[in-house]
Length: 83
Image (spheres, rainbow, N blue to C red):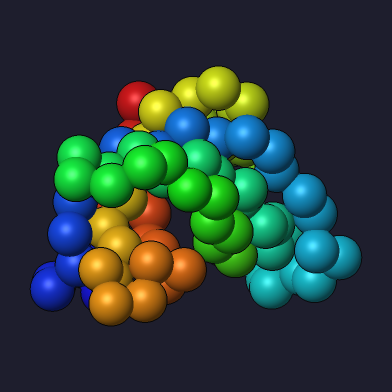
């Protein structure tokens, strides 16, 4: 996805703890509103393991860069949530 997907911006709508832990780090469901350039905005959910120190990078309203599969828009990957 990261190599062949189409780049778009996405707004974080919500962050939900899935209850899963990996190396004591929580897995969360990042609820997004994807804002592609050539189609209407649409919702997507990305599951991701994040450290507690990085939780602010996924705050509601924050804009992230994502890549999505135009043939299957529900397939979305967060490129880099960096600061």
